Length: 358
Image 1 (spheres, rainbow, N blue to C red):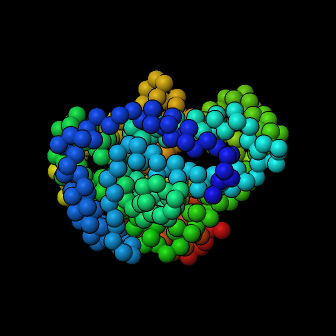
Image 2 (tube, rainbow, N blue to C red):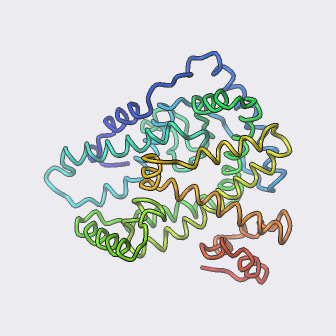
Image 3 (cartoon, helix red, strand yellow):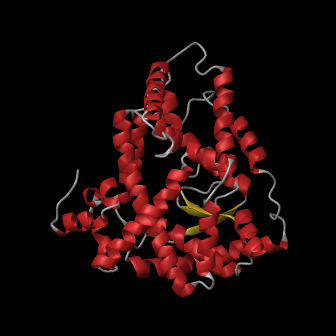
């Protein structure tokens, strides 16, 4: 875990809670049905997803209904686990991170996760550590999260039928669980890419100056350096950028596949699915300061992953049948590249010949 004192995690939590704000419906009578509903509907979604995709995750998905603060705590634990390799590479000094650095870093992390906590509906996070003292909610690494307040607010504001909306969300998150646990190599491949990307990070100030130079060059060439993943991609080294392209291609496929399954099953099993989809699409279209912030943290890139990935999956299924995507699960070398995501015919031609990309 991260070296003690390198980041003020308690401050990060306090900042995150302030940004997340109070949970207006957490004690409402409307919230009483969430735990029972999501427990039942998550099991129902597992059956539907397994039959539709052929991907069967071991065990039974465990639904965890959280408020915004609980979601924040769990993701702080995940963040702490994720960035510990970077903190361990910080050049030794008499005091490690200075007190100011500790507080600035903590405030940035807290603000980021606090803001996201107001928008996220569901999550399957394979980077959450197993039950330990660093995971205060004791949820472990194989729980499907639902942020109850955010779900209730959308149901209330748009008059969604609760059980239908909850099933629709559950289908999406359970599809991600099926991808990571039903494809034997997927979890280790993904975490391996993340570890490679983090392993290339150099906390030396000279590396930061070099990154800033690349940003200035991009702007002079008329490019928007925030469009391909926010600040993380903006400061990536050339080697990191290659790794991030693999992560981007993988996540575009998984997010697009999740959306495709969610909407295909939703049309059959969820009353009002079309209107729900329109509302969520509009919700992703941000304006003003929210749009700028979304670019900075890379959420806009994630939204494009949904669009590009879903279009790829739809094109593949239209051209070669509803189970044509199964070829992607054969091994990492059969995953579509970034270029193939916008040219699905090239991917179909490659995998039909048994050709692999390393």
